[in-house]
Length: 491
Image 1 (cartoon, rainbow, N blue to C red):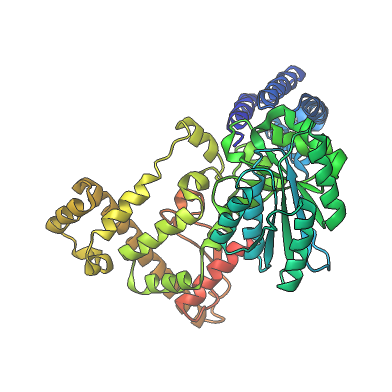
Image 2 (tube, rainbow, N blue to C red; image 1 turned 180 degrees about the vertical axis):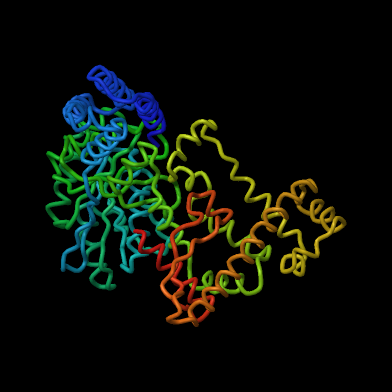
């Protein structure tokens, strides 16, 4: 996602950072590099021209040119303008008091509309709504079957209306939602071509018949510069309210997606970066701009961590503080990282992470999780609960059972040892916090302490996060709840 653009922009900023003060020639050269980077990323040339002109004008002020850190100011200006180009602020779905709310999806053939409909249904279901999918694509072979299959996988019903006209299917879906107390209907229309007037008219007719609360256009990120012509035509005929960018993880350039908001004035509401139902994410212009500039998205990591966490994991954390870290706990942590999108996904959200990933050729061996899982599952129940009893003979047996070498078992055992030591330090800190709370007015209350560098969290840029109040939590669980609350406040 925006890999080549991110690399080119960071190379430009690196050259600026090597200078004490910037001259007009330095700014002009940097803007030329930025222009070429955007064009090579397939951003529309009119959008590039306007972006570079505004950015250069702001960079040429005395405040920037004569400052002590002009390069940082340039980066800040580029970040501001890029955020503005992407839409400035998050654009949420707007729901009315009408039951059901109707969301209509339109787009070209092959844009990923059907899968986007399912992902949107999954997202709304997670938010507590009861969606219904309407299969209004009667032209593509097995389109309704595909929607029914995908809908079944996420537990969302599909209204098919086999043999009926698409307009009647959409109407029937709304009645079905009323009869079965479904509060959202997502209408999946047929893919169409810009030049196909009949199909475009059908989209207009469906919109007129069901009066959707939101019309969202699904756009393939790999469409390139032609994306401007596509969205302009649909904006004229269907007057859509927002855009879903699909397959954003499939194009290293992705510049077409940067052009949508600027050309049409329509906000990007969601982006899809994967195949799984949970890969549809709300679009945050500021976070995306930071990721493009290599600044990462730590807030996004925290949100993913919170989604992966649950009450059972918090109880497990309390037990780990009390009893130590087991191999079962390590297995749970690996599953949580997978749930958050894997190490590749997490690394891409860290400051400089995407650049580091690009330098590795975009490859990160996620298979280590499967290998370590096999090692842990080759252990006995007692060994998983008490890894300290694993001696050389046991390691050889475990390696043979998992199909790995003893060296790989030793590597996993070393990781466990580091985590277990960290838990010991945290247990000591928790006990000190409890003791400090009892001192009351003796000067200890209200002080703040630093978290230790935590293996795993530290690798994700979250080690040593924040300070926790030591005003006397009543238990280890209370300390953990304070830690969780602090992460939420970081939003």
